[in-house]
Amino acid sequence: MNSPHTPPFRAPLSRGDLRQRCQDLGPRWRGVARRAGVWRLVAAMLLPFAPLSAEPPVRFTGSLDVAPTADGGLRPVVGVQNIQVYRANRTAPTHADGLTDTYLHAPMLAHWRGHFYLEYLSGPHAEHEPPCSTSLTRSADGLTWEAPRVVFPAFTLPDGKQTIAHQRMGFYVAPDGRLLVLGFYGRYPSPNDGTGLGRAVREIHADGSFGPIYFIRPNAKTAFPELKLPYPLYTASPDPGFVAACDALLANKLMTAQWWEEEMLDESGFYRVRGKALSYVTRPDGSTLGIWKNRLVATTADKGETWTPTTFAENLPNNGSKYWLQRTADGRYGLVLNPTNRNRYPLALMTSADSAEFSNLWTVHAELPDQRFGGYLKNMGPQYVRGIVEGNGTPPDAKEAFWLTYSVNKEDIWVARVPVPATATASGPVNDDFNSATPGTLPTGWNVYSPAWAPVRVAAEQGERVLKLTDEDPYDYARAVRVFPASHGVKVSFKVFAQQTNARLEIDLLDGAGLRPVRLAFGEDGRLWACHEAQWLDAGAYTAGQWHTFELEIPADPNADRCAVLVNGQSPLPRPAFFTDPVATIERLSFRTGPHRERGYGGRDLPGADQKAPAATFLIDDVIIEPVAAKKE
Image (cartoon, rainbow, N blue to C red):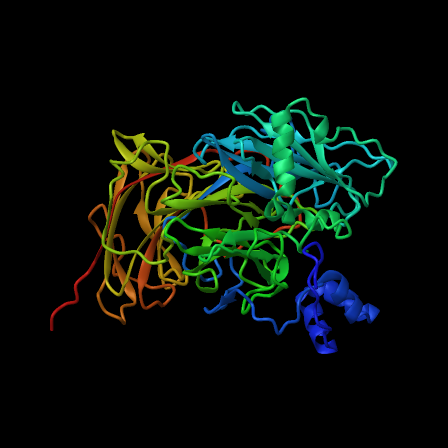
């Protein structure tokens, strides 16, 4: 009979099963196994899990048809707001400690006493490059974030190299309400190979200040057993409440199950299950579902004391990035992931009524800018997603949305606010004048992409409340998208105020896959442009400091392939503009302060990335979208 402190017995695997497991490891480890001729050894070492024939507790029943573009050709979740928390900067950092790091990754999120708390790894240029510390920032509203501070600094090891931070868990709200923040001290060249120094902990106080650093669990297999650690064990703290909070965390087998990868210790019985980057959620029957990297899943009915054998989720991409499970306020479940076997873009959401069968596939971050700073193992895309672990706080808007955090291109830290219930379709006409919105907030119902240097906000301008897009980023843009019911015939009207005539604003109508049949632009040359069958046609000059009204109308005909365009009540073109991309329906209106991009590219340092571009500002107001009735014969 199995001890609860040891992994359950697993039947021997056939050679075919072992080969399949190595296939699921991905190209890097697959190549190692093939060259060495050790399929069985690699599978046994890296995936000591249950036979593939085990019935998986998670399956995806939808389609995984994802295009190799930033949005994957998928519909977005209506109303998602993407907000950049911190923009890496090598020469002019805004970090409280002056860090010039351009490798920022693996963020973690909690909500405690009126603030979001977010920590992330911070290294000079590349992944697993010393010194790498852990930084922390906080925000009262998720929009405006404090200057980050180092919460776990690196220190020097006996080999002369400095430590490398690593983390699969960030925060713990103790039974008495204290907030603990944690990080792991690893070593070069691999901080999570089981030979690091150990896990550190400190308390965050209500005013945002930090308590002393302690080690909560030194690593028994450390490569430096002779080293006297620079911080004492937590039991040395003079605060009995802090010690009790750490004891409670150590006894919590769900929370500490996230630690195994960095220690790889099974002998002591401390760990009950193996796996990388665990995310878990409470199921309808009260049990817990866990998912790890490489689409491994298992369940526990006793809060992590014992687990079912891990197996592979059915019809789920085997991505080396993280997965995130989320129970939403409407009683449903979300699974957030990069929905391909390799690419870490887009960031997408699957939904489920019971946490077992997931369907739908919609984006929650559909943008991919150029990587500004090259570096080893700096994958492209919005990746390593985390949300707020159960028990680590409830934001005030939890009934309306859930929050995620992730890195983009392993150099910028972002959050996303995802509305609940999640849907990719809209209902009813649109009539947005922003008069009821509070200045400084984000517009309800709009999909927003808001970099730190290209923010999107509701603002009080020109005597009214408007949607304001400002852009000072040399390599990114601001974007606001309004989803409306898909239609063969639609009339779209809005007005735009440009504060300059030397900047670009592109306006698109899109279908469900992101095709853009109708394209307009405020050009950097002071001219308006309209796209007709992929040809940009001059639609006349525009004036800075003046509102310009637009009316776009597509006939209510399934075969319609043209759009009538009126600017300030006049047609700037000799005839309606023919579609550039043939589509059957239209369902999105997009405003973007830069040219369209299918995806960004990286691997090199871009010139001028640390300096703001001249500011460009566009105001948008009175957006009305309504269906057009079919003409009677």
